[in-house]
Image (cartoon, one colour):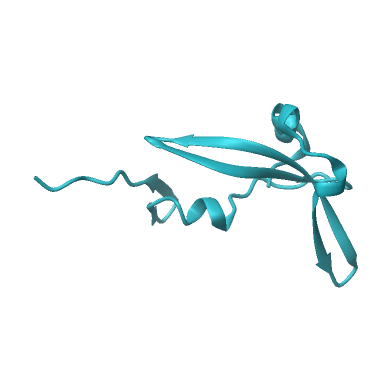
Length: 88
């Protein structure tokens, strides 16, 4: 999920509004502008969706589907993407 200004960079990949993600909340539905994107991290290419709220400016967050594809080390305030090493 991205803030509106960052999402604008992905708007060329935006899918039709009828296919935008919708999330049910206690206050009703949250409609998310949705675009397809390819995330390049090291040697990996991950096909993913980029989202931003239709009705308010969101925050920059990484989704679970992307996190599942990466080995991430969280060390206090430091965050590193771990590279897999092949044993000889």
